[in-house]
Length: 414
Image 1 (cartoon, rainbow, N blue to C red):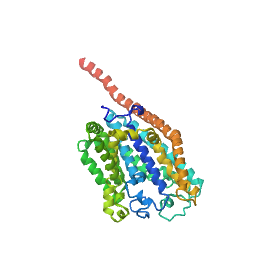
Image 2 (image 1 turned 45 degrees about the vertical axis):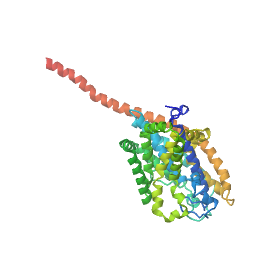
Image 3 (image 1 turned 45 degrees about the horizontal axis):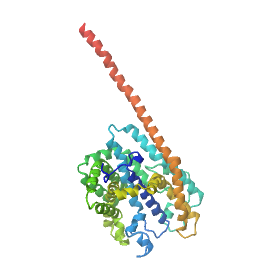
């Protein structure tokens, strides 16, 4: 690989280190999104909230500055990244161990989820969550004034439960479904290897259809497929990057790709608050989000300056705690809002943001890193038990034939 081409950082054990930085930045954006959501005027979705044109809230919502608080769009980016990194070992490793994969992946996801629900419950019980904001605001809808142990059980049930006490768990439902359906995604991505343009176009159409009909599966699962397509096309992406990086206009090209992808992700916001009255256009533009996320991922892999940014120590640090930060930050933000009730809306955030980062660091060390080891152990155990059980069965079926054959030969000869 040339010095200008795509590289895998040796310090990360062969991982695409830049993607860890991308994930870390996306986690910070989600943190900013939910932090500002405590302000009732903040438009959580295009056209919602109440902002005055030209006000600070308008500038951070309906201009390219929206990238700093694009929460829903960052989750789409998470899904594309998951589709890539989970699919890649399957298409790169001959004889991929599916028996080990399924329990390993479930433990890898569910142990942090279960622990995060316990953390969330502790913050919910620490202070009464009786909102003074109007009904329908994010803070009121995300508060739990009548907490009971049933909320813990429902939050643990990703497939059919209720993540009331820990809002981000809604996205983990789709992570789990994708993980369980990974063989289908891998086969589909491999089938579209040569027709990847059609595959990406199909993902855009399905996402639009999901947003249009309020179908969760169609709104979010195509983003994982986009990541899977990137995984099966990764060598082609690298080769393209190598060729592009020998040209004089490479920096302009990569900037346009990265910036254009970012603008695609927040496209509905760029039409201003009136996008709420343009429903069909809003739906169509939201359908472009996975394509924009794919462009950002490709630019992060192929453009050396951007890759260096995402491989920098600060973003690598945030990337290392990104999953934990994502899981624990909302209960802390809500707790802080009630702890500093009566203060200006931004005062609780001065407490909540650093506390969320500190808790995420501890959660990463205490829970997430251990879940990695436990997941590998349970995967190895499951694979070994499967081989032991079915291996003996196969041998027992073969052995009698090996014994019977000589007997028949001896009878025939006699």
